[in-house]
Length: 171
Image 1 (cartoon, helix red, strand yellow):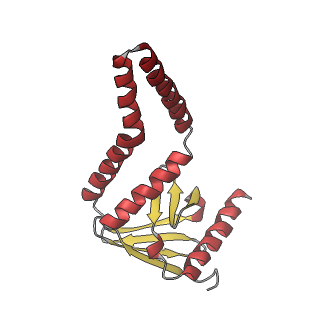
Image 2 (cartoon, rainbow, N blue to C red):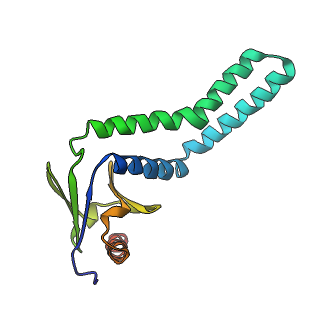
């Protein structure tokens, strides 16, 4: 497949893809956020608080620290996942067949509710989030699951085309 050909991607935006979108974007955003370092510092202080509370017998401080730690390590992600699924349930694109046609001019995104075209100059970045891709156009991002690509060759052709088009923007 040459870079001058159009690359056509198709997938259905269903609950499984909504969950994959959540996992990919949550992992990507969490690992690249500066807030996570502040969170780690906060968690470390709370863990020291638990140890100090045990030594001094202050069970109120230990209970508070423990609740915050449980929230940080477990509940926070569950709440975000719940919001993401609620967003999917209310999405106008729920269960839509989505088609992306990619060429040297940009990406044409078509679905049941209409069509839009993103020129390469408008796209800020394309992120490889595991097997899936995230296409950023601030303040939006668009999710492309690995299942949208008909073959590994098509995925590699898309990446080459995107890299070439985004490199032109920088120079």
